[in-house]
Amino acid sequence: MSPLALAAILFITLPLATLLFQVLAADTGTRKLVRQNLLVGPLAVKEKLARSRSVDLSEIAGRLAPKSYEAWLQRLLNRAGRPAKMPLARLLVIKPLLSFGVFLVGILFVASNPTKVTVLSLLGAVVLVYFAPDIMLDSRAKDRQEKITLELPNTLDQMLIAVQAGLGFESAMTRAASTGTGPLATELKRTLQDIQMGRTRADSYLALAQRTEVKDLKSFVRAIIQADKYGISIGNVLRAQADELRVKRRQRAEEKAMKIPVKILFPLIFTILPVLFIVILSPAIIGIMHIFSNSAF
Image (cartoon, rainbow, N blue to C red):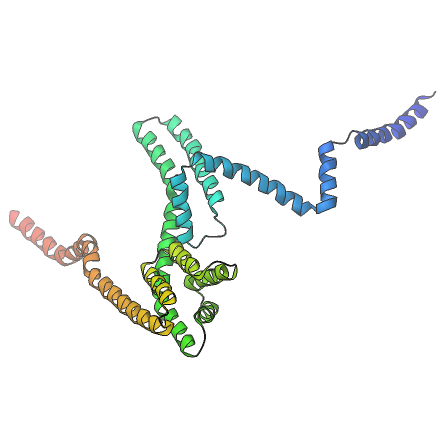
């Protein structure tokens, strides 16, 4: 057989043999994935795989974290409004990963300059990065509690107007939640959802107070539960609570105003007064220096 004919046969048979080998020796995992894609769709398969990985990591992080610390984080997330982008499982996974990443980066600097200062700085940075999400969540929770405290008197006034117009307490709460835009409206909507799901009203109100941990809201919840238990008029309770909360809000504003002189004392002493003394006394000091320098000659 001539070399040209042999080359033509090889040029035809080799690609066919390679294609046949790839089809017959295909990976079973790939075939299984293709079959799952055809049955449930590729997005569902990807979500399932991602969910399984995240569940494994969250389980490991949950076992490593102390139960008391996990419960404290749960309360912190409740006070912060349970951010959708930061659930408890993800938070438990992100915190050690961030600390480990900072530790690996810090090891490079410590290896180049191994001193006590660098080692202590590395340990401090690791601890700070580990608790940084907790600090951010605590700040967000305090801001949210303050917003709820400020919104509560106005919300009670809206509910009082609705009750006086003939609506029931839950209908008045629904109207206040639908017209509101702050965190208090969100918590009221969740409370109404708990009631619609079959939870008792007392338990739903107590859950509202436990989630937010706002003192004024706790007192309001206690008053509502007692009024519902003993048959007291809801309108009178709303009016009394709204008046009391407005007085408390005014007292808190007066207290903050009285704290302002104390808060600006240290910035005034250490930043403003030295600059003011330099501006005022510099010409006099320069003139005195010129006088003594001329008298010396």
